[in-house]
Image (tube, rainbow, N blue to C red; front, side, top):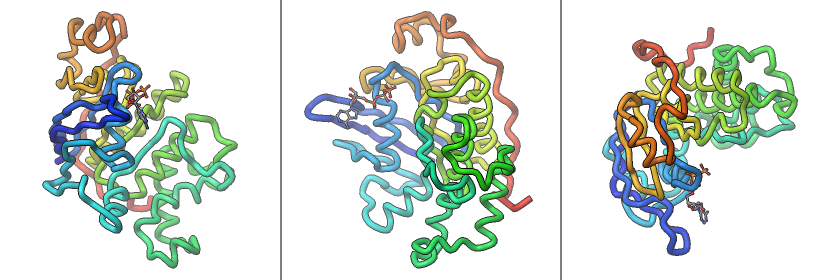
Length: 267
Ligand SMILES: Nc1ncnc2c1ncn2[C@@H]1O[C@H](COP(=O)(O)OP(=O)(O)OP(=O)(O)O)[C@@H](O)[C@H]1O
């Protein structure tokens, strides 16, 4: 369970996230929504400690991750994978190596420094690529892939970290509608098949409604909505975006959840 208690972040006296409190049970798929500048990225970045809070705490299974330092902080970041809008791949490296980077926290330091990947690590990385239908791209340079393919590589890299939680910061912002669906389906499958908690910042309300089982709405850093997509009525949407709920469109219900599968057994 992820617990966020009174989380606050100020930049030069200006508030970015303002006293946010949330409880997120394991296995949730939570969409964080709100206007540009509402504090969505800052909230996610505080969960994995890319940003430190000015006040408040983040607890994972009762452990205060806001106090972690050194090795313990690195371990937490390993269990808390990030997926970014800009993919954050090493463009000149091949796809398989990019995915293997997600295994770094599972190998000894000397092996990590020398990039000595075991047969098992390679099998796990390939299995993740197969899962997202891009195994045939394994030997290609990451920079030669389309945006949608690159984001699937980034999600495969996140998955092989074997994280407890995936923090996805606008993962579809630069993608066309077809790739948006493919990438959101990939996140939904990770969530459904492995029970990995997903916190996903989204601008597109229709996508958030279609994929997330809970929406958390921020406005000027404050939590102004927290509930299932069906409860985001016109009034709540107006508070968030200044428009009617229906104006942002809707999408069908998300697929049924299966029980968690064992993680990444090579096919
Ligand atoms: N490193 C920083 N230094 C100064 N101000 C920052 C920094 N990061 C964020 N902010 C400010 O904090 C506020 C919230 O920004 P944040 O990026 O979290 O919003 P957001 O909802 O993710 O926006 P977007 O949807 O445009 O990415 C904004 O006013 C932003 O300018």
